[in-house]
Amino acid sequence: MATLGAAWTHGRFTLSPVLHYMGRRYANVEHTQTMAAYSVTNLDLAYRVPVSRGRLQANLAVINLFDKRYIGFNNANETSNGSSFFPGAPRTLMAKLAYEF
Image 1 (cartoon, rainbow, N blue to C red):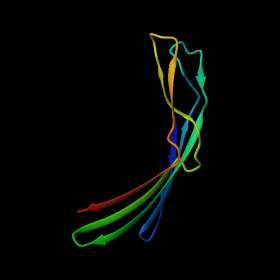
Image 2 (image 1 turned 90 degrees about the vertical axis):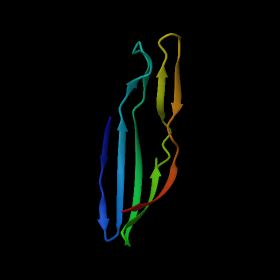
Image 3 (image 1 turned 90 degrees about the horizontal axis):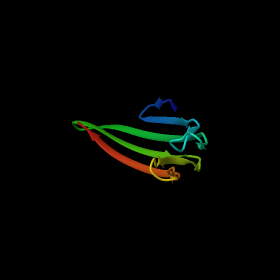
Image 4 (image 1 turned 45 degrees about the vertical axis):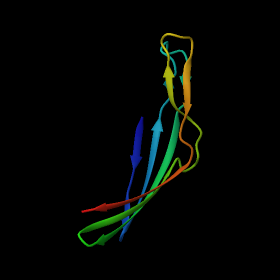
């Protein structure tokens, strides 16, 4: 598993792309079934402005920018014959407004 990111700031704006990589891994406790590796790209844009007694920051984030389909989590059951698989998050937009004082 690895994460690589960067942040570019220009004036009051900051742009932050982040790449998450998950390598091939086992899907069961016997280590006989594998799950494919995947990469997901996220992008965050922030705008900061000073206000009285603090700072206001607005963020817009895109999670899974390229809408990659992947298995995000699996539950390897030790007592039965199967594992449960759960999909990773689809492309998601998230907005945040914060006041720092």
